Length: 209
Image 1 (spheres, rainbow, N blue to C red):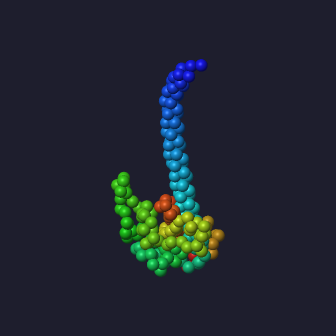
Image 2: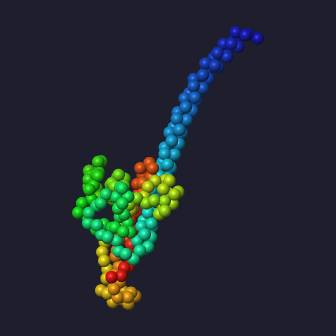
């Protein structure tokens, strides 16, 4: 057997396969990188969705808490025509105090969207505004589990008064001297990552003159 001939053939074979091996390795590295980016985007999207879901659930439970609070008393809440600073915890824009349907000013933190330049409403304000002017819920009103995921705020607006004596079909079901107030409840849920969700409802409660 010719040893030199075998060595030459081995070198030729090795020289043929080396580019192939390097090519395969390059493909594997590229695929691994793409897979890593895909998984990173996937988990990021899942995290964002979970944060959005948490914010929505906090807002939804905050609306229900406001409805329970309004239903818990037969004393009509005071109606405020202007904002009051609620950040020190002494003002309750909840079952004891509600806003007029339209306030004189909302003291907006952001008047326009920084990207679209569209005008912003009060419910579109950042969390700092909600914390200053609305009621922040505690763990007695929504669960510790939800509050561990973020924060909930509520504003209640007085929409209109409806006197049952003005409608015969309704007054048959209620005694004289009973009226109803319609309230608009707007709640904001904020997750720890800053995701925000707004939930609104109309709530009607009856009172006696």
